[in-house]
Every structure is written in structure tokens, then in C-alpha cells.
Amino acid sequence: QVQLVESGGGLVQAGGSLRLSCAASGSIFSITAMGWYRQAAGKQRELVARVTSGAGTNYADSVKGRFTISRDKNTVYLQMNSLKSEDTAVYYCNAAHYSDYSYWGRGIQVTVSS
Image (cartoon, rainbow, N blue to C red; front, top):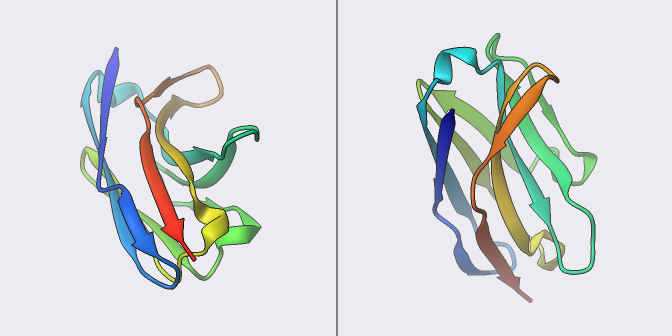
């Protein structure tokens, strides 16, 4: 089992920045990728960014150039700059073992006011 605890969300004005953190504990040796997903009201959950154990990264087109994902040992970060109102969502941390299984955090609210 892997436990994920997110922090760093909140309310920010458009154009501002936030940094999300996700601390992982438990059987983290099994994890091959960590990432962030988000779900806006009335929409499906979508991938925002992910980083693999080999340090490869990928991003949703909507956040490229604005968001940066990084990982330091058991913690994954999402630096979010130039935030837009459409970035408002609940952000979920995810830790996966290939495509076999994954774990989810409880989610954290990010609200961008215009």
C-alpha cells in the first residue's frame, strides 16, 4: 500500500502561482511513476503532468510552459505559474506501478479567481 498526502492548494488570482506537494509513504519501491490529475466541476478527471522513475515527464497541452512537475525522493511537486481560471479544479496526486495499479490522494482544491 502507498499513502499519498497532498498540500499547497488554495485560492489565487489569475496570473498567480501555487506549488502543490504530494508526500508518498508506504511501499513506494513499487512505484514507477507519480503524477497529478485534476477534475473540474462537471468534467472528467484528466492528466495534468506525470514523472516517471527514469525522470521522464509529460504534460497536458493546456499546461505546457506554465506547470512544472518534479520529484525529490518520496515527494512530487507541481509548480503552477500563470494560473488561469480554467485551472480551477480538485487536483489529485497519483502513484502508479506501470499500468497495473495506482494509488490516489484525497485531492486538494485549487481555485483561480479572474
